Amino acid sequence: MKEILLELRESMSGIVGSFVLNEEGEIIAEDVPELLGDPAIKVSKSLHHVTNVIKATRSVDKLTVDSENAKFISIPTGDNVLVVVAEKTINPPLFQLMSNMASVKLKKAKTPAPAQKKDQAFGEELVSFYDQLFSEAAKRLANIIGPKSATHFDEGSVAVRNSHATLFSELSFGPDGKPDIAVLRKNAENIKSKEDLTSGLEGLLESMLESVQRVAGPKQRERALEEIEKIRGRQVS
Image (cartoon, rainbow, N blue to C red; front, top):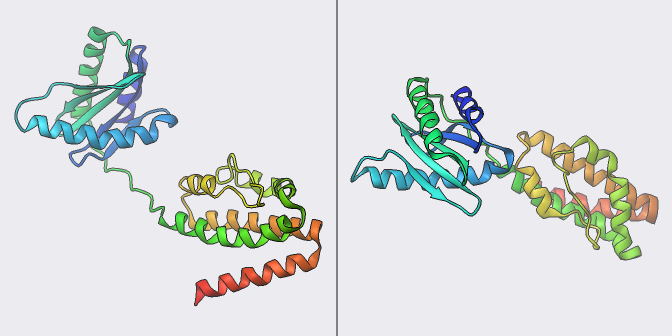
């Protein structure tokens, strides 16, 4: 199915991307830019619901939802629904022709199973847990040199941030020395493996402890480790 969607986008200008919904409103095939990923998922549920409501009383050939900069065009294709994201200036007659051709091909195509949804519960839980550990490391330096601690933590974590680029994309440290947890939570959604996420977070914590030792001395690192181990112990118990 994705090949059909790719062919549709390349068939004319003005098509930004497209995706196919099954009877449950789940995306089973897609060709959308990365920036449209989340909006496509959100709008898919609404389009599926509205289409079903309208179909209950009359046939639906096409449903168009306009936004400020683009439009979502929903076209039933057998048991599925083709949704095209298009520019507002798209050529209607040509689009009608090309979308009809794609719809016919999609009806004949084998319907794939919906992609398994990633269980991201572990991401939220892990980041929240490490937030406590980061706090213990951060305050050992922030209490001594204040907001300048952010610079030391930033410089000391370059290697681990480069080795886990997805997790630490656009990460910064605040004046309290702590890494931006909101950014970590968002980035953690893109990490498929709990082991990979743990490895990255543990690496960041270790880099912070090394910065504490380098700037404030080994005793401050030891005190941070003592508190960190207490937190780890409470989690196990």
